[in-house]
Image (cartoon, rainbow, N blue to C red):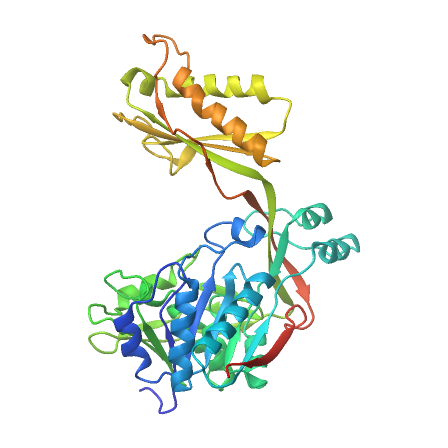
Amino acid sequence: MPSARTMRIMISTGHLGTAPSGPESFAAAIDTMPDFLVADGGSSDPGPVYLGDNRVLGQFVREELELFLVESRKRGIPLIIGSAGDAGSNHGVDDTVRMLREIAAEHAIPKFRIGWFHSEIPGEAIAARIAGGERMEGLGGFPDLTPEEARAASRIVAVAGVHPFIRLLDMGADVIVGGRCGDIAITAAPCIRAGFPAPLAYHMGKMIECASLVAEPFMGKEAIIGTVSESDILITPFHPGQRVTVASAAGHSMYERETPFFERTLGGLLDMRECRYEQADERSTRISGARFLPDGALRVKLEGARKVGERFMGIVGIRDPHVIRNVDKAIAWCREAVQKRFGNQPHELHFHVFGRNGVLGAMEPVKNANPHELCIVVEGLAATETLAHKLTDFATRMFFLARIPGSKGSSGLAATTKETMRSSPGYVWNVNHTMRVDDPMELFPVHIGDAGV
């Protein structure tokens, strides 16, 4: 049986700003007066450019911040945002704090305490530790980090656990904006601070990290409330058309995971092997049985992005059956033409053939597709915008003029974009490693100040 003491955490988005929260479910959930409103401000999922170039993916960030701040302050509900600005960079944190202060002033919200923490680490500081003999092991197949790669990263962040959130709550923060952190930390932190069992707190963080993705049928950006007690957690959706079932909750344990049984955070490992999922009522699922295994030595995850170059893109449409059958020869002709013209200047050129293997590339299991048309996305990268633009435009145009055996026309083998398009700069993840720390707070300086009127 659930215990009498509980804490209720509300969330309506697993990636702040990518789309608006559902207004009806948000209103229904927040009117029940949850103990906290939390939001995951970002993710590494969309790729390294958002960290490397300090970019924000979503177009609804300010609208979401306005909704969250106005409605939470109206009710005196604390607000916690993690991984602010998509990547949790210092710029992302500071810009989010700035917007929240502006919104508070615009709405004449009574004065409140706003806290924040940073997660960036200078590449040179990491390189110095490696040069001094410290080993930083790679994750996911990455080799050990070298001083050269640390210095080459445009930006590096450490992934925080619950600790800076708890520190800021202890300091009296009503609103918290976090740098890069684990997705589960924003929910687990207030629960652990309130004395609820760490395994249940972390597991609830895992269950509600993506809001309504834990429910069925699929709906994005709808409100969910997780309730933690001394013995279990309860997950409830607030869109009337959704249910959290045993299948949807257990399935979410597998979401974005190599294994459904473990989730690592700074300080330990969430072990879900012995979890029990039960249908509590028609629309809610109760979960128990998680364990938390503390680490003997603390290691923090590092994320870093290295710039490859400026990037442009062109689009090629092919309908000619002969060219489709010989598309690899057409691509080779274009590559050779680019190499002759730009070969002495460092660059990258990629051809993504949609209709054949544009999504999976070499992993595509269908090898003998017979499409009636193809779309080729031409992607060129170089050190300067001028060179990237020029070589991508040239490569795209060459499809129009490609010479392949059996072609009957003198040109017009493909339709192409009139102008190539500037894309985001090209970045790669070059830091995906762990670093030893003695104190879980040592990389995450906290700050607190006033906002409102």
